Image (cartoon, rainbow, N blue to C red; front, top):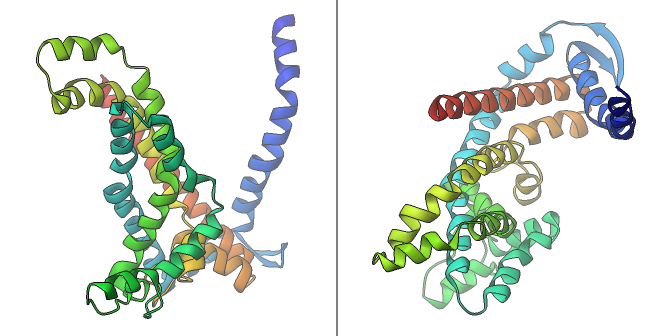
Length: 286
């Protein structure tokens, strides 16, 4: 009993801070989403009226579909990149430390600076970096971010460039925990590098990869400042995300109850995704 009291006393500051910064805003947002308000002051209980408004607004459909599009493209473009980078670095004999630091460097650059830098790279005029390079090969300037079909994949490429290095380090740590005797035995049996990756590396990092997969989905589902800075949700809402829709309600229209409704919806979607993932993993592990 005495040991439990000491443990709770040690955790008490953390629990207070967690409750104040996480649970209290969460509960306040849920309450706010059911009211009309003047600023942050509650005025009148309106039930589900705020939810009906945002669901029937045309911006919501675009933001909802775009958010899933961000998630889809992040899995297509960004999920395998850090795994491949980690495997390649793990196989290196020389320059392993230099390669590791070089690939991690984009992760230490502030996200806003990265978004601005890639906005210049994707600039649709002849002064954009990509168009300058294409011009050297006689290719005419491309619209890049102003083309609705390319906007989200191009933003996801930027996000992958910035975050893949940090994720790679996690995979690299997992790879270095693999028993080297497994590789030595496979070499004796005549396995080449592709066989080692298929029969040793991938099975050994499978659990790590599926955990990072769900974390990536949750992170990309909350994409905000990248489309906000690079396209402001355009062209014609082609890159508008749910988080940016919430930002518009809160800081452009100052309609906090509807912003709270969007945030509660995002939270419920993330809970649903997590429950589905855990159910799928539990069934597969049985």
